[in-house]
Amino acid sequence: MPKAFPMVMFLTLALPAFAAGDDGVAYAGGTVSQIKAGAAGSLDLSSGAALRFSSSSGDLDIPYSAIDSWQHTNEPAVHLGVLPAIAVGAVAARKRNQYLRITYTDSDHVTQVAVFQVPKRMLRYIVPALESRAPNAHWLVDRTNR
Picture (cartoon, rainbow, N blue to C red):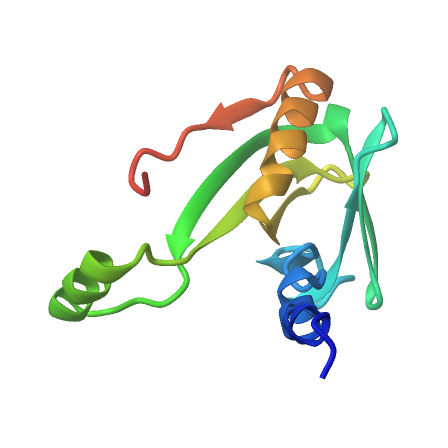
């Protein structure tokens, strides 16, 4: 058995950990009817005029100038009772899902809400983009889930 065999086995078993499983964005829900809740896709911030969510069920363009408010929240991935939460919290940190809620006015002058589940590391790019490109939007601070 060659000496490189354990390293090859380790890399083979560790490969799923580096897969792009949690890199995607999901449309969690909202008032937009053209996209199904739970649709997986991606956010495109490259345009200076609009934030674009692309998925297999459709595309959604949100002009930065139409954004009224946005809010970032983080919620526990699994809701536990008091005692299980204390037991799990003593052993390991609980996983939390990151949500981005955007309220905007569409081309028909109707207020729409879009809620996206985003990876935590993606917030480093989304938050500054919203702050700089939608300066008239209100940033709603979530003080309940810290």
